[in-house]
Length: 256
Image (cartoon, rainbow, N blue to C red; front, top):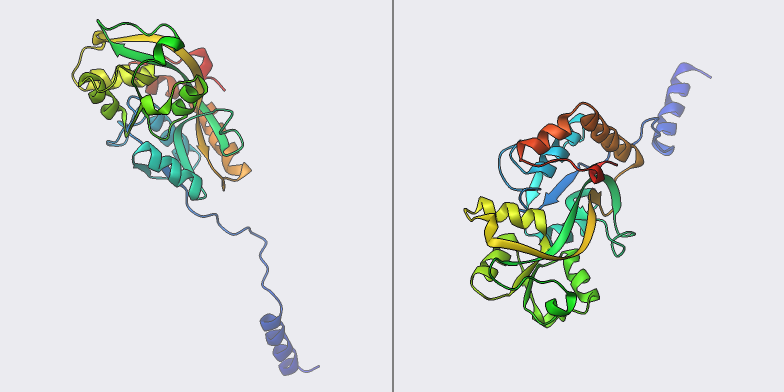
């Protein structure tokens, strides 16, 4: 077979046969959604975006997985995370209802959820007491499910768009109490210029682990890189320094 004929057959083969590659196609870029939930996540400059957002951004940088955080109302963040593949969300409580709906990538922290009232008002000590009151809870959060499971009627619940909305409702007497993260509410109250002593914590219904998660689309290799980055930040003290910057202590339950 002459050279010209071999070249012609090679060209025809290239057109007919599918192209193959030894390397896998590059994955789509990561997205990262959250909401203003001080001191965990809050809009601001890098390094001032809340203790868990700063930690997550440090993890992403170390793992070489770039993702720019976008701050939206929590219900919208949840919708985005469940509708769009490769969308990270933080801080997400790991609950039985969510267990199969998300990829649980890295455990970051643990928090307590309690009924919070103004000092001077009756402290909520029992769930029976709470069922008779008007309660503010965050729209789109697992807190609503917890209240529903405890027999709190949803018609008595004020579905808030954010933490500040909940606290304004409490101050104006629209609700008798808030149900949510003790840490978030205490810190947000202080950041808004109020004395934390004006709030009192009552019955704690639950505690939950807080994770960096995604609905789908994160590869096993990417998850391993994120976990390795988190382990490295714990090992060299970087994670602890981030917590100290916000006046917080890392508790034993923050460990993987």
